[in-house]
Image (cartoon, rainbow, N blue to C red):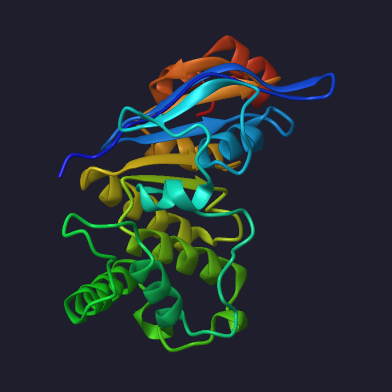
Length: 254
């Protein structure tokens, strides 16, 4: 099936006299990994919340697959294919890893047959197969029966990502997915993001690990003071004078 493009156009979000997001345009294209970078206070988290529906813009629109979703709640957006992970993992701590993934698989949006995935024996089997494949792709099979609340932060992040993938997203929004990961886990994450994009999913990656962002993305937006100050291919954004002076501060990254 064709994947949906996520677009934010003219997005503005104010808190009293502070404009956290100021006339931002952003596109997350199908089959591409898009990065969003910026220093603390740049407005990244607020923009992320506007895209996911946690907050509503004062001005501007958000669309998914050409449909205006600006006033839709996060759960409705998720059923339409817009799936997110969080800075703080939000798993069911008393459930096993595999059961957490089954929740993601069985609560996905309506499929083309008109029923809810997971409410029929056929749907349940599909969900189980999806979970098995996802556990294997992330190297999590060995902890499938471990209770989520006993896992390390790095493992929790990978499990939350796995649960998001089990929902079969059209667009996947990742908020600081590399936080708490060791080098090997970060490499696994990079490979997985490329694999997910290769399957046609649009990915938005927001992370303080700029080396990860520059290495895995097709397109990068740099945000400072609520505005997009640079956008384009990673190499161009990396060497942009404003990005170097305001965000990276130490000249172009090697």
